[in-house]
Length: 285
Image (cartoon, rainbow, N blue to C red; front, side, top):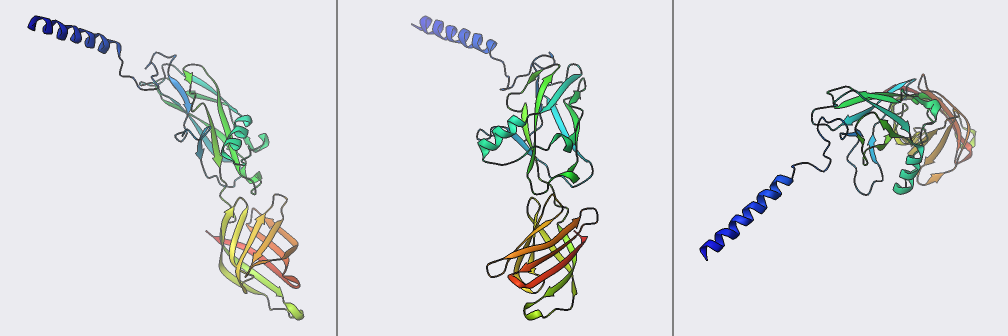
């Protein structure tokens, strides 16, 4: 009987050893080390969750004639790229449409006139990353819109393009150049024809409420509530007022200078018996 039990134990040990010899301690995305053909090539993005159709990365950009926006590509080989790897990138607007539909968002891709880039990235031999620069002409962006850049790895000279991170959505909130502190020259025409003496208020704050939308406390420095200014792409400004309720406003003149960060509005408030002129000059953050 003892001899029989020893035979069973011996057989189990041999079986266990045979299985151990077949199992490799590799992760989910085993890349083949430095073999060259099996490494994963991917965009550097935030971790993708199952509820998101594409991985994303959000980067706030500034308004400028030309803003440098880096796109980084990774290679997952344990010892880096076995040779120089050329990665070709493209803008995939269909991916953005798919993302908007799936996530109930309304981002738009910048038109080709609003960006430029080389379209190719090189991951040098022995390295794990390569970076391309997309130049964004943010000064020409319509600041009332929400932008995102859908980037796709179109091809790679070596390695396997990632299924999860081969396409990504780069969300580009634009830091409003109008946000900050202002000196404001104010002139009221009040009811009954009474004209106030023009006056100036300093350290008046404008705070971002949305793309191209900013708000300040009060109305013309006289009434409580708040005033919202929407800077439109055509160089004009919409004004809305809340003071104990939403008040009717009719803008009769408005314009802005993005280089000097000044703007002017003239609008009727409540009725044609009241109009307000404001000239804003940005003085600081």
